[in-house]
Image (cartoon, rainbow, N blue to C red):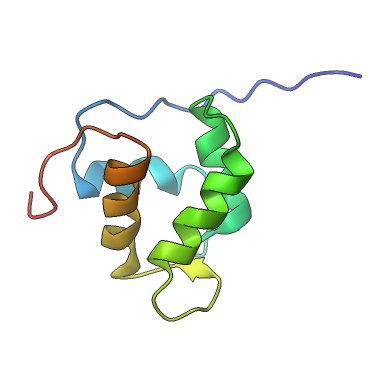
Length: 96
């Protein structure tokens, strides 16, 4: 079995919402501008986080205000806040 290594850019320790959004955009596999749970799981895996599938599920549950199964539009700020709080992402304020 061959192992594939993804060459994604790592998430900086200090980041703004815009930088967070740009970082996540590289995991938007279908290019629709929204992040699905699977795409979020891949993003978290790229950070070598344990239980990326579980953290992606929890993050989506917290961020997805309209319950459509995707993080889109203004929900990105909610996802960013979740990442800061629960994934210990050091970042500038949301207003930045």
